[in-house]
Image 1 (tube, rainbow, N blue to C red):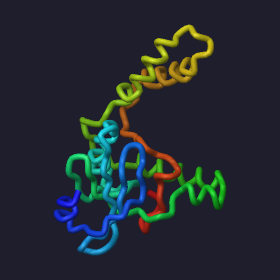
Image 2 (cartoon, rainbow, N blue to C red):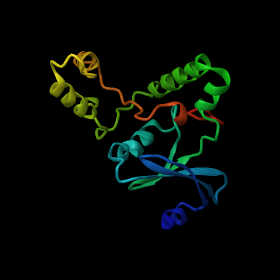
Image 3 (cartoon, rainbow, N blue to C red):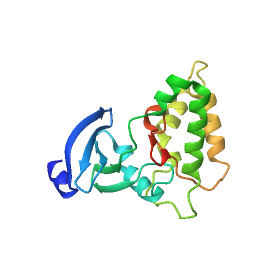
Length: 180
């Protein structure tokens, strides 16, 4: 990581999160201001397309991708106040309003075709469908009805739309540009 920090003119990495899929550091750019360095762990195969998605979104509803190199991303710093903080202080209705606004902004993307190498939802849900098929006929299966609904929705033939794959209260932050 040291060579990437030098190449990106970033310094003083401080670990701010260690998740099952990545390590997240706050750094300071020589050009001024904080940024985030996200180092994906080997287990994070699904997150390897994150840079592609963020590049395509170009900051619409999400942080800007400033640079990337393999499994390491340099991201806009969205700040410290998460949607979890809002939820804890102001309740579910306030947090739900913000989440709905963030999702609407993510889907308000201009008519630029999405990148071809994003993971199709059918493929992403493949292990769920396989587990449901294996459990078919079991009355206690946790997969049955939900999987049937997912298959019906996927079969409706709507134009594909990229989805944010990690949208939750601890991953939405209030930034100077608004909630991202």
